[in-house]
Length: 278
Image (tube, rainbow, N blue to C red; front, side):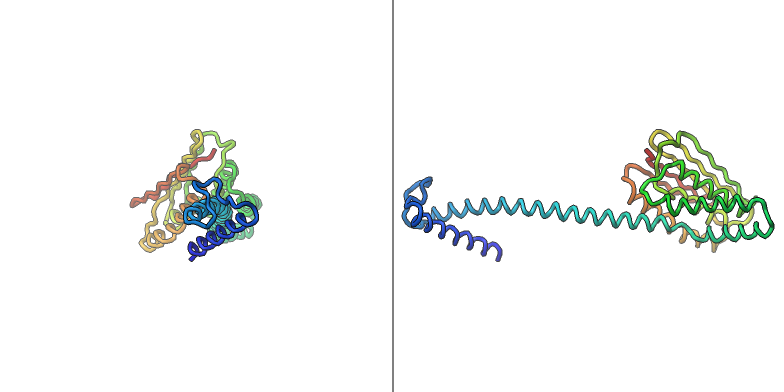
């Protein structure tokens, strides 16, 4: 229907042009043509229609291109806003149980009039401040992220007393490096949630951070849950946490900027992450 209306409109315009030129301008309607005409001929009509169609096609292509660029920008802005919203949601999914349990431990220390109470409250406040105010940007300094991790580990040490051994090592230059906030902390919280709280007796958490040139090599390992019911819960809940991290990596980094490896054996669960921090 569009093509029929378009060709009909061009034909009417050609007829109108011929008559206006012939009666108002000059009887030599087609001076550039192969022949002198005084009537509307097929050759003249086809030639004029092709010329007008060329002009209309050219202008239409410009309009379509401008509309495409405008729509592409709108879709890009919408996707960016959606990604930022999803990233913000994923950042807020760190377990609230940690804060509740820490507050219970602080209460116990306060009842005992422990000298550790002010220090623990300060570390919890620093951790909460970081999560509330320092995670709004797409990237955070690696130094701040490591400080957040250390505060988290100190709080876990107080909660667990001597039941857990935390072996953490850091090597390389961490200055002027940036990383997505709370990314590493999610792996560490996952290790404590499933490797410590679901095991009986003393356990060991191993954390290694190594910076080489523009990449951070992060490794964390924890013992697998010993009881069958804990193992089944681990498979479900740990999967949710790891899917969270995978989404954040996919949304916040180019696929060539990170490499995530997750390995589970009978006794140990290990996460290895290579990620660009320049």
